[in-house]
Image (tube, rainbow, N blue to C red; front, side, top):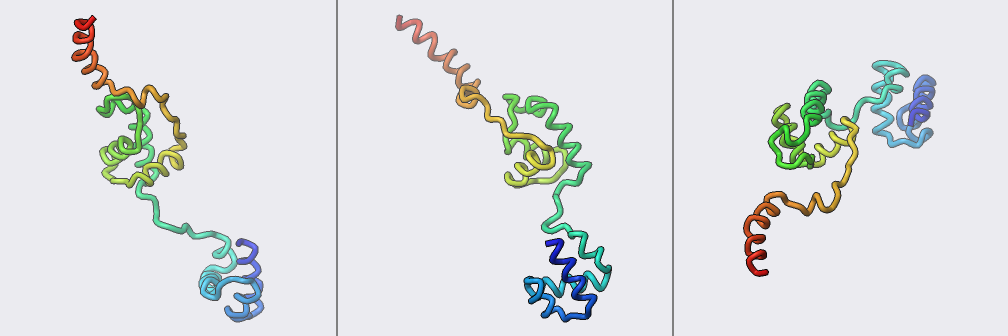
Amino acid sequence: AEARRMRAVELFEQGRSSSVVARMVGIHPESVRRWKRLWEQGGAPALRRRPATGRPPKLDDAQVEVVRTALEQGAQAHGFEADLWTLERVGVVVERVSGVKLARASVWRLLTGRLGWSLQRPRRQAVERDESEIARWVAQEWPRIKRGR
């Protein structure tokens, strides 16, 4: 892409029209017209810099650091029962500390991209084991089982 933009610059400098440049470089004429406007405003360097595409991130760098600090305290420090982060829990903490509500996909991108975390699946027993269920089973079932002996 960079090479095509620099080739387009050469052709602009030769006075070629946008439609001719588009044909010669093999790029859609609308893109070439946009490149030409950039080139007219800032020369070749304006075409070297790729403007950021897409929506700007919802959290600025300072907010991301606040979130990082909060998450490093562990899930239990934020009132969750098990010390395990889920997308939902991270989303709750992000909103609590930054005021920004993120969709699950954005929470995922925040964790894996900007924070550099990796997904680690907990051991199966930890997923299937619900502490309150175990407590109830012990409290309610065990005496009955013992009596049945």
